Image: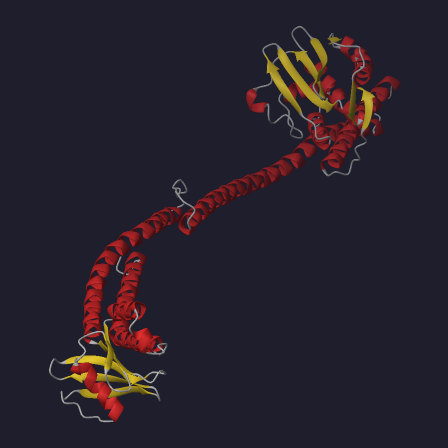
Length: 493
């Protein structure tokens, strides 16, 4: 990766380090000597201030003065000479006849610029009390900074400091800084490469994780060991990965639901076609019978009263069946489209069940079916009493019509936590497994011949399912070896 962030960090950091070192070397090379000169000037002026505090010969010959001068000369590499008004040397840090100090002092006193040693002098600063100069000794090719002048007590002084040490110090400092710069650049390069690799390694992991995310692989997770920004970014990418996985999962779920909705729409269209076909079929037979017997009455096929009454009974019976089926369809339509009002009230479900059983005893006796109920005690529920009666009546009608073998119907009411379960069991043949889910569909009949015997329309269980859905309750069917159980639940609290 030619333009990788690791190379960029290493290059930029190395470049900044090298530039900083060169800048330090340049500043040192240009300004260090001037700083040294400024320090030397300050030292000479400090020596002047100290000498200017002398009031006479008595103080110059004291031990304190001698120690003070010696300290100054040692600390600043200076030489000093003091002469009285008679031009006698009263103090000298070197030999009293040191001409290198006497000559500039004489030149200052007499105003003579002649130097027997042939030195070159450059004036730096001049006042009424002293003159500060830079002198080059041609004999030894050395430079000095001198201050010569008069003191408040009338004495004359000259002080000198060598500048050769300044040049040497500057040269040594520059060489040392160059060596340090080389060493620092080598160490810095190694450290920068290591640190850039350490910094970019998590980024490379994040790049690998993001590459896997583009392939919709969300198993790879970033694992950090600190709270740095990159680790925070990694944690955010983990959250993003989880969120993307969750979103894609939701999209797939929504897609599956959409497919299911499309399938349901297709199924509904098929059911609508079946519904129209079933309604037409169910109405065709009674209408044909009514039409036939009505025509028979009109044409007076049988003149006797008994035949006419039979014809009228058939017409009335078929009309009643058609009316019942239409009423059931209207009821089912109202429930399915939410046009039927649900009236919630608290009532005794045991009383409702026993009343319906009592009303069906005559039908049960005609079919030779025995009915039993497990309880007579009051059990209170919250629901729409009228709708519950219709559900239980449908269950009982189906049980009586399909009871066979032992011909028993067993009704059970059982309280479970906050709900009551009502079940109707009848002995007989179990419902085929492939028909279990279809029995709740309008006009669906498991045994069409048997249904036709008792005049069933195949709408009853559809009404049960619609009512229980409107009440937000559950209902179902369970197959047993010796029969079938239909059940539903109601809230007890």
